[in-house]
Image 1 (tube, helix red, strand yellow):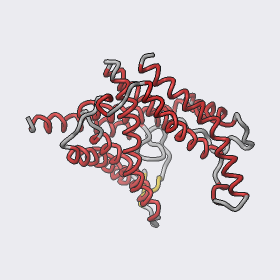
Image 2 (cartoon, one colour):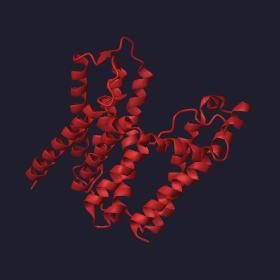
Image 3 (cartoon, one colour):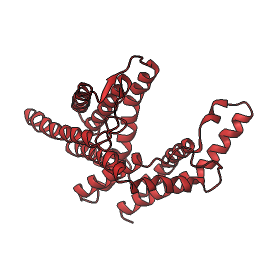
Image 4 (cartoon, helix red, strand yellow):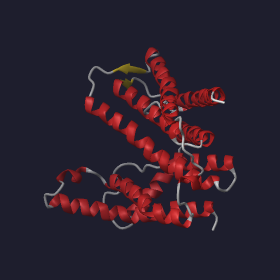
Length: 293
């Protein structure tokens, strides 16, 4: 079986296992809550457990997938040690966060956003935690494992396109909250159907999916050009920190879909900003690597 087919089977398996695991997690949490154990979990709806079930399914099926794909070490994924990892990491943070925050400053100047009067510091703490943890997890999975497996097909640009599409789909597919009032064994399948239904909304596609896809392409290209994950981790961290910090500092004055979404990573304007980051990143890599020869 070819690597691409194995990968497709892996993702189908994640959806199936996650769909049927979600009701089990939901019922278990409700049972614990009614017996006075972890009572706070009772406030979470089924969709919250569905999203967690998908993550659990991805983790459970990862080892079998790596085994059948004959991945034994990072070299099998086309990754190599990076002696300049710290330079790439911090450059990535700077290259992604700075254009995003400059865009945010312009939006404040044009009264699209305004500065908040009250700052919730616990929310900023969550931004910091997400900026540190999420890039490592998602880059290891999407650009490390998924892209690494696809690159073995010897079709570099097709691999970049495919993993970027998968990255965008995974982040784009979120079912509306509380669509499953009565949870049954098929509630997970119902959540998948509602999530895919969002692709029927052209404005959502223009404002969210396209930007996520371009971000995925930038991260994939950074990984391919450096044979390392450090630059993509830095870029990813910068986007999360920049967008999260801006959302913490400001609130939106007007709704401007598809130009601007709920944060600085959704919309046609952020799409242009991320495209600018792509150009800056390629230019920096060209001259930085040339200076080391």
